[in-house]
Amino acid sequence: MPSAEVREFIEKVVKRVHFVPDRYDIQLELAAHIEDSALLIQEQDNLSPEDSEKAALERMGDADEIGIALNRQHNPVLGYMWYFSRIIMVLLCIIVILQSIPMLLVSGWTILFDHPIRDIPKETYVRHVKPNELIKLDSRRIRITDVIQTEDGSLHILYSSYNLSFSGLHGWSSSGIGIIKDEDGETYFNGGGRGTAGIYSRARRSLDNFPFEKEKLIIEWDYAGRYYKVEIPLGEVVNND
Amino acid sequence: MIRLKKTIRNLLLIAILLFLFMKLNGLYFSPQNALHTSERDLHYGPSEIIHSFDHGKSRYFLTRYEDFISCSPIDRFIGVFWRYGAGSGVENIKDRPLFTSYRSKEADWLIYGIRNDPAIAKVEIEVLNSAGEKEIYGSDTFYEDMFYIMWEGENDSNILFSEIFVGLKAYDDNGVVVYDSDFII
Image (cartoon, rainbow over all chains, first blue to last red; front, side, top):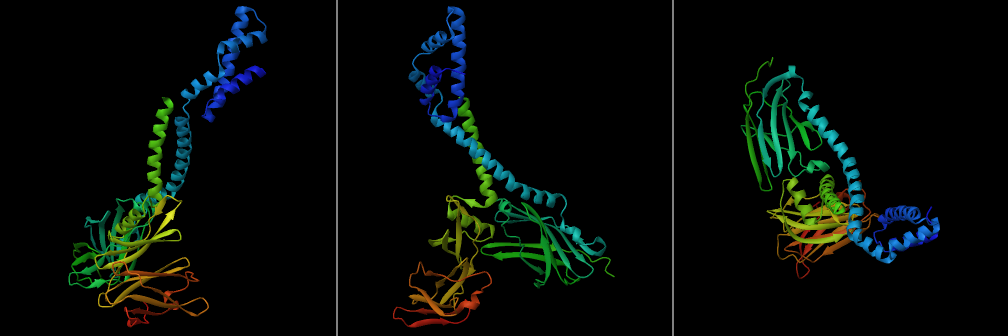
């Protein structure tokens, strides 16, 4: 336990240090240094503990000067920048990790396990083509992976999509693929479908009663200055009893 | 020196984490960026901003893109950010003297539109308030032919615009009615 004089000396020094979080460490370091110095003086000069402590304080010099020098070393501007940047970094890290977990889980689940093609029993297929057609629509990339017609006449368009602007990260983006037609210009709206969430999504668009005799599927987007048209040959109908 | 290095490292990590935080939440430093990114993700625009105004925690943008018009709100978030989330437009039907659309947000109703007849100098909308009484709101301010009228109603998500809409009138400089519609916009 340092004496009142030593505590007073140390207080005077640390008052000059404007970066408050470092003051405690400086106090400990100075107290240890004065104690070591006093012990050395006590052994060398054969003085009493009180006298050796006084001598050690005298050897330390002027408390204000030491404080000013230490303040320069413990630059408060840099000190506080470091201190607050550490707090902000930790907070942001926690928030980003907590917010990312659901999105990463959903995306991981989609990529690994959730494929809407599994909604369609294989034994019901009468036509199946894999166009592997890549569509670029603004920063969105859509890949038509499979087109399947089943024995009940439904036509299923399966596609995956992601957005280069990472809008999937906050779950807000367009998911449509456009108007669906056949080679004669007949449009098809009735049906259903589903899509998965996350940064990479897979979707199924199903159309009811698509005629078996049609040979081509046309997917067209013509809205607000954007245009694409994809023509997909559907192949022959097989196993349609 | 060690502290300087650590500070630089922290600042770099903060920049990366802030980028991720903004991406995860759809945040931008500028409302225009938020609007135009929202539009692009809806495969629309970028629209030309004709006029903007603040209302509540949102900034509304009266915009035009090709034959489309829109009035999208972009919300302020924790003071410095603007949150992505609106953006598509409606196509102007040019054979109508006045083309309008509407939107609601919390307790606010908004109609906006464009005058296709340059003689139109004032627009008025008649709506029902929560007590079932008729109220008239109007505007004679046009921004490159676009206008908006905003009013506060007792709005909840169950109320449809068709339930409160009574009529829409447009007048010329002499106060003569040049457009009168009691159809929903």
